Image 1 (cartoon, rainbow, N blue to C red):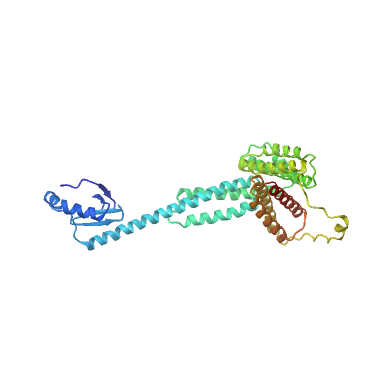
Image 2 (cartoon, rainbow, N blue to C red):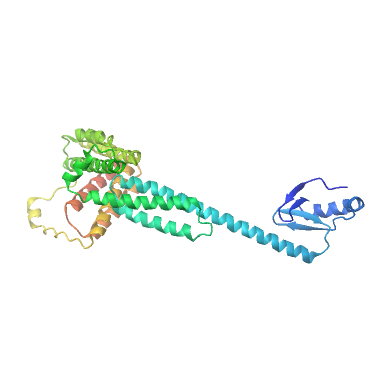
Length: 360
């Protein structure tokens, strides 16, 4: 009787074999079928063994357990090689996917002139390329494509940094240029985006100063101007930037409504005598210009996070971000227009959170 049930192709022995879920079922097959198989084929299965590749039990007519053990070791090594191969493929895919996503984000940053963060992220990209290159499989054509994309981002970074160092007149000349050159068009879009964001930030800062003094004149008009400017942003990162600033607009509108309704309670101002006796502000000292810039940018991001937490009514997160913001500001040990504006905004947001908690 030929064993036809449960046949599969075993990649270990390179032929079709019967597969049993348990050794007991394999041994029972031998017990009840070996005589009939012997009469038909001249040889019959005499023992069962576990196959790592198939994940079950086979039967064999080979009586040598020593040979069986050798074959088991061979199959075990094959499985290990296959597992290592799959692991390396997954590592390459993971690194490649992460690198691709980071390059998309870097491109968005460059289209808004964020050169410092771009430089930091591109250094990480270089490490990813080195990691991919160290793998035995290397990712093939994918590695060549990714390396080319990284090199292209480095080239664009150099171009953007060069453009940012130009005079305002030179920048405006590029923005107003009618050149059809692709690189020139890209640079024109980047400089235009940077100019738009700077205008929006300036308008929002003016609104923050007015609202801090309980003044509402022109706040709505400036917000409308901001929205109009936001629509002029072009190319990569436009969607993300619109979402980011819409959150800021909503938070400022909420603050405006509170000022109009008389619900905003500001801290008492110091009287003239107190102000006269106060110690003069320490002069601005920049121990580390790059560190100073990174801290200011980080504080601005935290302020945006606090505003979002207020909109989301997540006041615990907002208070935590406030505490971190105050700590970073104190640790900076710099008093200038930037730190004064940030301090004023943090105080204003602290009041908003406190009032929101009292209303709930």
